[in-house]
Image (cartoon, rainbow, N blue to C red; front, side):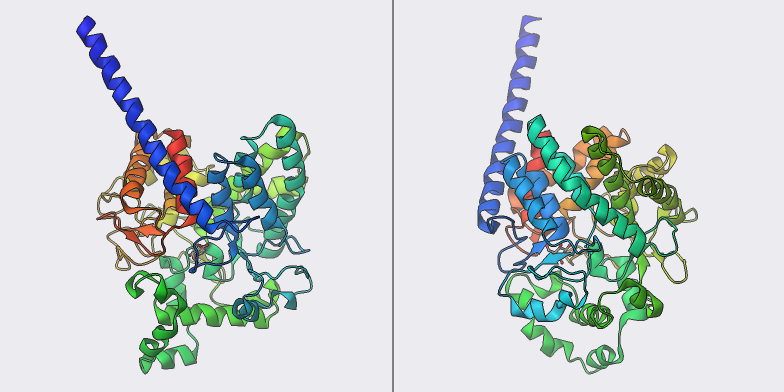
Length: 458
Ligand code: GLC
């Protein structure tokens, strides 16, 4: 009896030691990445490869940074809202002063609502801001938290209101995206399918036919930082820039773009994240007792019930939808699991996602979960950008969702495998779901930040 209790105490001690050590290693690695990519008021995603401030990157960064320094995490988010347009839009990039190429590419100021004191892009990115503000605030003493929430709430309200007023012209509850970059998952299956169907202009088709992409590939900036096989195809990349130019030619005015595009999507992942963001906004408003506009609350409920429009009962999968035809784009990706994070779906749907997709080896159950595309898909590639590799922000969101729906063992498994991989492979941009090899850029900020957050939960 005595031996037994000693033995179990010993094991408990060992376990606690291991967790602590794991925690420390992740912390040391994360601190190194933060220091490398810190630009004072904000953090860039990766030195060299991504030299600007990105919208959802900074939100994920703040979620991790709050464990190190909540004031600095708050500064990261305050820096983001400097770029907010007068109409409420939060741009996906705040350009680093002095980068004339990107300045020329975007020229966000063509739109009268763009700020004049800072150069921004003209499109948005997933709405993680409310989540980040809520979580950062939870690490602050009460008075400071309330003043932070008071400062940020109006900005988030304006952003969410813009998403409804500008990006839901049919009042369906679902937000429409104009460009794959807005989804943050640039070449993921639904978008790549749309690109092939409707995106390629004649000149890109000619480049493809003449195989000039092989020459153009040589001038790609990202080739310095990651092998080609791990990045977006050059032809797809040219198409992305050509769509961006079409949007710029319409002065970033959604109505004008929607009047002609066949390309726009009601993006499943974005709308799932929007559901969560709306709920976090309600939490912030409840804590500081500042009521939200009634219309916004109504719209938020509409989005939650509209998520069912993405469900395909035949394939038991959620898909994105074409804005124009309202047809589902039956090209599956990790986005199908994000309604777990978004919340608001029934327990039955959550069970279908977990048992029918997440835990099935031919879908999402790889040695390192969770691949961004089911392994059975013809698009799946274990090393290519958003077409198979594991991205830590996706795992982080799905882990939250699994816990919310009571799948604690599954959440723990994904978290532990993610942390073990990072300890070996480092803070890479993405990872091979079969081998765990690190891919893409090195010292990637959101990997560091979210690993830190996951380690803190351990
Ligand atoms: C890539 C990713 C996007 C991210 C950006 C900066 O474009 O696809 O999600 O925000 O890099 O890290």
